Length: 369
Image (tube, rainbow, N blue to C red):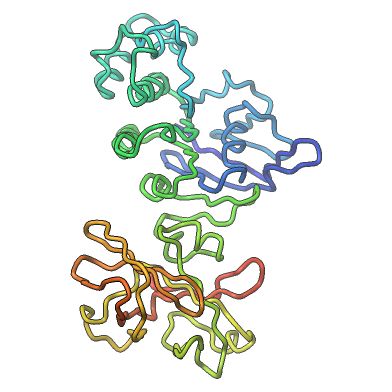
């Protein structure tokens, strides 16, 4: 396996910039996930690494070798596509070994690789079938098998699970994670699904409009988002953002006064330079006050009227108003709150984040990890 380095990489179509000054290092054996909304440049970035898109400016290295001018077949990269990209006239067996044959592998190597891959992905019973005779999940396993049969330096995944149903997506996500760990693969994975990003990635790269907004471990991204875009894009339900006025050392909205001194890592002098801030609270960090343990750092929101309750099994999501905005909390099954009832909820102030009210919505403090 090899590392991948992107230095000042830009991609434009005419005067339209798609990827802007992207810098990223993927370490040897690391699983990095690019995530962001449609059109953010994540798939274009992957295709530039693969050689399927030219770079407008910058450099890409695999190992110590610059690959900008190398054609795709000389980059020693294996890629799994969203639409499987299987040869319809070939059997499963032929699809899996196609790349090995093209690279000139000997018959014994091809036989061993086919046996390993088909056993790993449970494809032994389908080797003589054509892609048209397979389900979506089986086709995706064949596409993965074709990539894994190669001894590639880097493995690329372009939204490989987006065409599968929820149950199969979960299963294949687990398989990809297991295989990557087992073979210590250097992998770059593109998705718009934050659950895939958070569960698969050693590190997550959050992109928007061709720009990298944040790079970090899943928990760093979740607990310490660098701005309000990352805060609301990562996490389901999204982080609640409530505008609050600065009055002395308090953050004021509705009838609540949050003591800023009890919020983790707040610079009070810097805070007083703002008229207003955005208070960020993840829905998961609310607790039903009737069930929470006493703590000096808990802040209680009293007599909140519940507008909606969605029962999700172990969890239930409730919707309510906070600071004039729709807000959500995720409570566990011990809470028996019902629609139109009032509830008191507590939040550990160490988990509260503050953002400025600029268009970028930059983080002003860092919460507990």
